[in-house]
Length: 414
Ligand SMILES: *Cc1c(COP(=O)(O)O)cnc(C)c1O
Image (cartoon, rainbow, N blue to C red):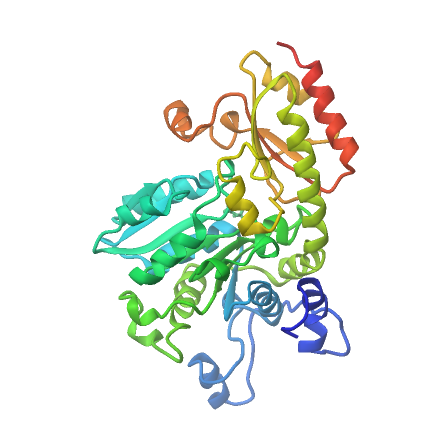
């Protein structure tokens, strides 16, 4: 299968890998427990000597089939799925880091991830936030106790594109675990392993499922990192090839002990959505570039943050990394005199909602919603002005989208 293209592989994987009664989907398995004919078999599965399932909290055949699909998309060596993208992030940080360890993270990250990093800091993990669009800033932050570097490919919501390849080279030289959150670009635009990532995170709630009807997250191990260099892997997980240890610990600690488990029903919905990801992404990316181009020229817009625009600080890098597709997310700053709420209230197509990577175009005023809790000072530091709109572009017909935003901008009160 691995010689096939992105979509061919996804749509045929289940029935070729595992034909149950000819079903083209891996069936939805509701069982929470899995029984064995002999005590020897039961013990062997628990001890990891025999493949199989034990209890639904650590996975079912349905979640395993989704994990195999994500592994194939990322060309990795294994994946663990979680109930949400945030559960996947928690599993990585809490399963792998200990008090006194140092984490270098991009300062341009999703707001909830930023909040999670504050919690991690309060528990004794030292954290340095750097401008990850410049690998030399990551390098300057490295200390003897640095264990991990964390970045987003394209940052939510500012769309900064991290210096992904150079940071990957740096982590390889310094033998650091390199964690890449690929949610905004998705493995369709570029795989995390191409940048040298050790672990790749995808929020499955976004582009991979795509229909706004499922929450999920995934951690994929690329196989590029040799965990013998990482001091925090427990002795009992020094099992098999040393490039597999990290994900085993993430599964045991992050899934079994922390319990952020994806259900079989939801895994099926995500897997069905994933079949059309490449088609949706092509449409979303072309809609987004067209909309960003029009909005940038609108007299009531002061700035558009979108990696596909030549005005974006990392435009050339984004083109090199993502081959001419730039994702569906943009930040649009309205001129200070425009009434932001009135502008949004004039929209007829785009929905006023949080979330991204959906079939529908979604828009929200960032300072009043997802960035409200952090207060004006931190918002200013992160470059989120009161007139900052986060737009997640969907698959609608392009003229409808452009027409909708143009008429709302024209009609808004000053
Ligand atoms: C949404 C998002 C997450 C969290 O994913 P959920 O599935 O909503 O928990 C993590 N990282 C990024 C970049 C995101 O956009």
